Image (cartoon, rainbow over the protein chains, first blue to last red):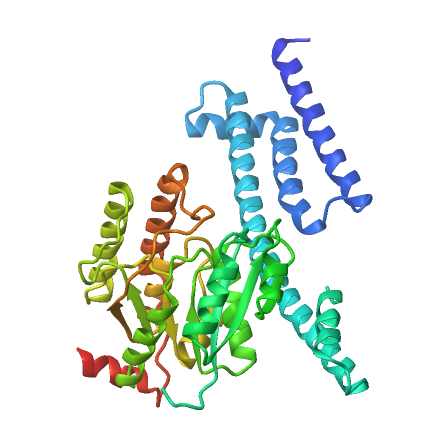
Length: 140
Length: 252
């Protein structure tokens, strides 16, 4: 087996493991389909190029790569950057949503404790200020 | 400012148990027309408890959201509860509650104003700041003045009085961290009018500023990025029948 075939075999095995891992994570519901799509696309492109050596070599030659395997690396790196950017976007969106949720929660909590206090006051009109204050402390 | 208007003082606080009671006390004494809302931004000390015993309404965020998010929840509260005016006061005792009257007088004298900001630098007063901080503030002041085409001396001041229009704007759109500079530009882009008035401020009473020396470089970069991204963003449209376009023309 030539060294080139060994590299090819390694590339094929690597991308197959990657594909299988992603699919398995999706199957177990650990990875949302939404975030798996970009991964699957990257792995699929790499797998096609790893299997179809003529395509890899012709594309690499046309783009000016001396060693075809370098095209695989460059593509892999490019996909990695794309995924990282994708996650930064997702994290930013989550941060924004978390902020809104926290604000809404605080407003609701305040409204709830005020309503509770008003209810208490309505139920026991003779309640002193003392008891009102207790009610306020008890409410979270 | 009409006498019957509903006024709210919002006090964002993160671990300010040392200074908060004093701030609430002086608000009660010097700004009696204002309801007081403390926003406890996930404090780990007794801030929330002291806000309640100090007679303030308490908004308790479930974790530390950051100053921008905390202040915005105050504006959301004011918006939902129909307040006409909001004054924003720091919980660290830096802002002098007696100066709220100065802000109110300015707002009352000119009905076209949406926001009145307290400035430490408009008049020469004995506010001392480190060289680095002063330089940073001056840089931001220059940039904001240039963009807004009017003189702004203290763009990092969080001591401001807002009318209903500004309350509604900030409830909808308020920057995340280190929000003051960007908030001024948000006002400008939405064609709200802001004026600075000279006020006296105290040195910080306790706690630590959200802008510590190690973070100041990050602060500069973050705010500068936000400013320039703001320039590249689409401006809000002026709706037909909107008075703001006319107002912008009047001032031009």
